[in-house]
Length: 78
Image 1 (spheres, rainbow, N blue to C red):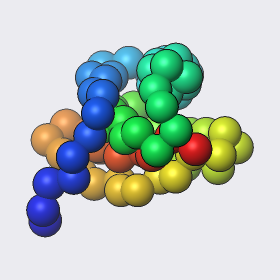
Image 2 (cartoon, helix red, strand yellow; image 1 turned 180 degrees about the vertical axis):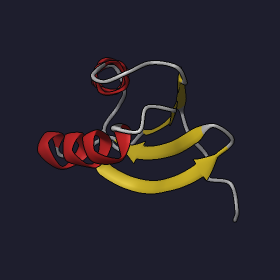
Image 3 (cartoon, helix red, strand yellow; image 1 turned 90 degrees about the vertical axis):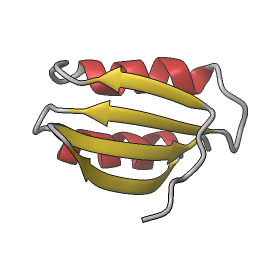
């Protein structure tokens, strides 16, 4: 898999719901439209929460991939 370039990164490993979504929302709010955020999560609920957050907030979920100990999410700000 080729690496996707991102503008901001959030390490949410070890954080439980709703903190990964809240951190994502806060960082994305400060980013330009079209900018890309990478966030790493370990909370099993993130597989439900992150796609739902993106759909509700108008952001594009570019990629969801497994990483050691969790999931990496690549989100383009809407």
